[in-house]
Length: 177
Image (cartoon, rainbow, N blue to C red; front, side, top):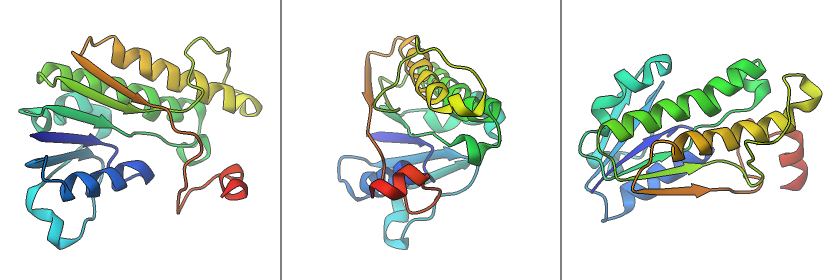
């Protein structure tokens, strides 16, 4: 089987790629992203990397999805890292939707998405910084809706709580962990 991972350099994606590469269930593990993934040399044999301009993910990333049975989307950022509410939504919603469309066009049968524990597209939110937690919840819910709208035969949505991240951890994450 072939897996495609979009968001492979992040906290979740990097761990996922390593586990997929170690598994005998996957013959090929393809990544799609703005920079290459760093993995141990012993795991590089079945890794195919596609480095693209994420603003053109649906077109430039399309070849990576060919022949894949499952796509995993672990894209996500923080408003502070992204620089604005608009840039945050671009990563957490627009790129997720483009990845789902590229996977669907390639005939991928199973799309797996990592969002957030409280994801809810109906959540009231605006772009003002004090309301960012609400924008986060709403955007993650909208990403789920965008993936479901592609009507994949199978969709899996993972809604973790706080993630243990080595870098770019928020104040709340540092306090909890």
